[in-house]
Every structure is written in structure tokens, then in C-alpha cells.
Length: 165
Image 1 (tube, rainbow, N blue to C red):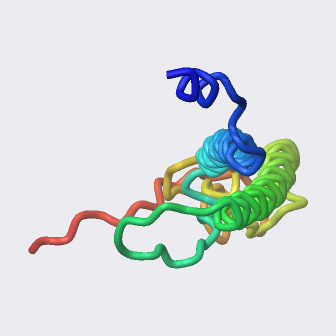
Image 2: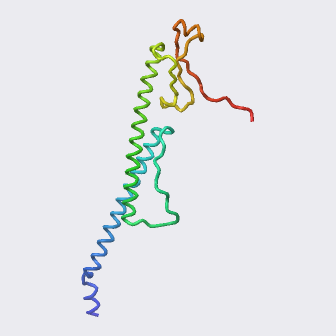
Image 3: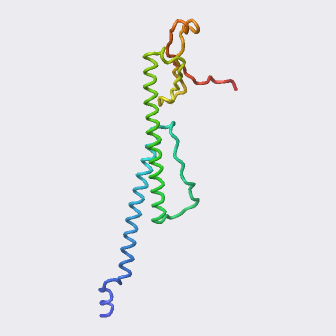
């Protein structure tokens, strides 16, 4: 009986304690990596949604089929891939925002001085609108307006009419 009491009161062997500490550290690392992956996925979704449908989703590696448990190295690769995709999406959104700002400035100039922008056509999609229309500087009253210098901005719906089936 004394021997059993002595064995139960002893500390675990150093290798067992090291294995338990390693398992705890790995569990904490996995939790941290999963939190980082979730944050990056949310940021990627927000970046794409900000300029939808004008910015495409950055391509990802094809998914591995079937259930699997990712190791620390795999989780780090997933995190790094997501971080790169978020960076690419942010660059694309920034470029798109610059393009839309330049298009809005051009539209303001077209509306202010249509005679300086003869025959310029600006699609509504370039302004970030989700329509298929366009702003077009045209002469008022056709050839007579062109000869007289009567230019104006015409807004077209641009959407094709429904064709019979």
C-alpha cells in the first residue's frame, strides 16, 4: 500500500510532461492559426464585396477532396495563401476605385463642357454603377447640331431590349 501511495504522489516523467506541454502549445498554435485564417477570409470577402461585380475573385488552389486534419505547416500555408489573396484583392479594389474616380471626373467635365468632349462615350459600369447604360456626348439635332456646335450629354439605358423567344 505504501508503494502505491508513493507512485501516485510522484511527478510524471519528464518525457510525459514535455509531451503534454507540446500538445498544449500545438493546440494554442492551431487555435491562433484558425483565428488568423478566419480573419483573413472575412477580409477577403469584404474586399471583394466592396467592388463587386467589377473585381474578380482571386483564384485559389484547388481544394483537396475528402476530410482531412491540417497540421501546423498546412495551416500556415493556408494562412499565407489567404494573406496573398487578400493583398491581391486590395490592390485590385484600389485600382478599380482609382478608375472610377477618374471616370467620375471625366463625366463632370463632359457635363460642364460637352463641346470639348465630342463623341466621348462613358459606360456606366466605369462609374461603379451596376447598370448597362452609358453617357455619350452627341450633337443635338444630328448634323445641324454638329454644324452649329450644339453638343449635349445623352444618357442611354444601353440595355438590350427583350427579343421574342
